[in-house]
Each structure stands twice: as C-alpha cells, then as structure tokens.
Length: 153
Image (cartoon, rainbow, N blue to C red; front, side):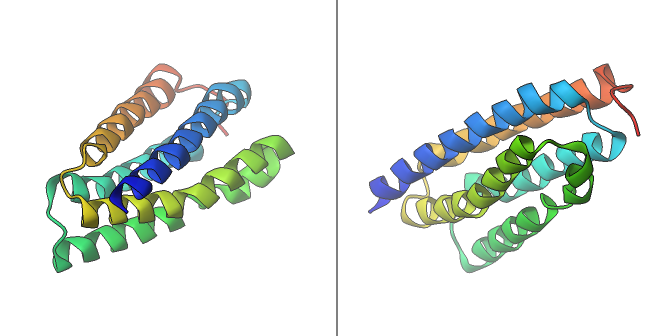
C-alpha cells in the first residue's frame, strides 16, 4: 500500500510542479505581480513548507499528526487569498491553472500524511521540503529583492 501512495504522490506532485512552473514561468513573469501577490506567494510557500517539515523531522505521533493536519488545512485556506486579485489580473487560462493547483494541494498533503504514517523514513518526506524551500527562496529573492518594481499596484 505504501508504494501505491508513493507513486500517487510522485505523479500528482509532478503535475503540481509542472503547473507551478507554468504559473510562475509564464503567467507571473508575463504579467508581473503586485506587492500583495509577491509577499502572499512567499507566505503560501512558507506555510506549505511548515506543514511539510512536520513529517520530515517528526515521527507520526498523535501530536505531530495533529500539527500536520492543522498546518495543512491552514495552507489549503491561505492559498485561496489572492483570488480577488486574480479575478481581475488573470486571463481565464491562468485562473484554470490556479484551480488545478488548488485541487491538487489537499490530495498532495493527504498523500504525504499517508506516506508518513505508513513509511516515516520515506525519502520523499525529506526531499519535498528541500525542494519547496529552494522554490520559496527563489520566490522571495526574485519577486521581493530583484524585481521589487514589478507591476506594483
């Protein structure tokens, strides 16, 4: 069963990574981001990372699983905060991309939780937070340091 969940995690995680690359590399770079989005996307990534760090460094105890669930649910809610901006700033294809990312976010967290519970030493539990950390550092440095004047609204 663990292997099945790991495969699903890799497939859905890979699709999410591809859509994130399209969203960031094509849509965000194409239209620029205002200050709220620039900082908000870093906040989204940071909260997702916080959730991922629990299974990366803790065994699946009742307390650590509760912390993971709370952080995961908070992450699922936080990522929707920009939709009022997106409704005006984004073309329909970008909004569809965001919808697909929203749909995948919860199942990915659920799969991480299952992999953690069934195989707490799985390599994915260490690799995913590292990848998300690198992406978060890029987001902050590119949008909030290098490209501060990017379409500020």
